[in-house]
Length: 397
Image (tube, rainbow, N blue to C red; front, side, top):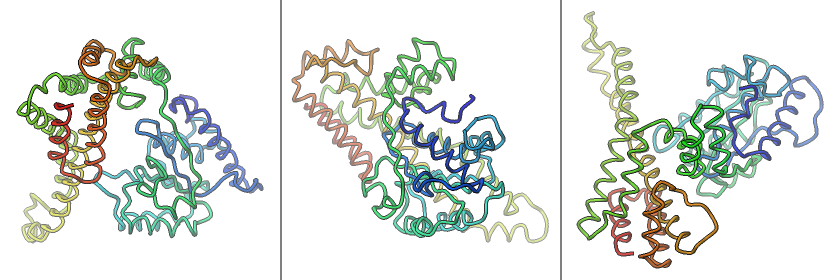
């Protein structure tokens, strides 16, 4: 890669804006005067899942630290370490659980107030800023209202709606809006960057509905393809009330298994590291007493790990629901003979057969049921209840 923005797919306008800002930032570092608004201290990157919000924020952070006057060359030490998340002046907040707490945010803001060690910028990248608690948001707001001279905050959120980011924070940030990249652009990146065969890349890009990361997983991971196949088989299985409940249980069980697999290694590593730090296995004087007194820290760790597992389960379930929504969308556009391609090309015969049996109105009700299930889970409705209600609607039509 010769450019930090190379992996941003189909985002020409945002990339151009970020390039100009990085060049202005480099002039600020050099002590030059720049036009008002050419560079600002707080940014929000918005867009649908898979559009590249966090990729854009990371690329911009690298361009700000670029040692070649902010061009974002991708090869200098500043670019390389920022992209690799090891730069001393670039900090990433990536929530593993359901929220970003106030203590974490206060510590980060305090650290970000120091002068950059490399002489360029202190950069704070907050992925999933929509998960900030109200108190954490207030702590961040104070820092954005009175920013240190060389600190830049980069927030990533699905939208600027008050449910995702507070109005007061939004009013103090410059917004970069990302769009869902076209499947052709995603396929081109998979082929160029990851060496995926052109036909596989085209299928994966369409199936992932513009989500670059998901497309890469589908192209490379047989288990991910298997989980998708199981989800797309759901409509055929809905032959009655009992089958609907069985399908709901299977979907929840699959999400549980995927989430458990995703967090198992990190959970084990974290616990072992904490126990070792607390003296587990030690034979010296006081070792046993130290472990007895460590119950509170182990309990806190278990709480964080449960939160991370819950988030992983919801994420896994949401990926399944997106695939299911794509199927009903395919049925609807086939029924209406819309001049757009289907998402799931490998089950086009199945969606075509369904289009011949269902009315467009009943298909739309099914699609709305899937979307309502996603919203309900996002609003903390118990997944089992939300999925069961969805399956019954999918069966009834």
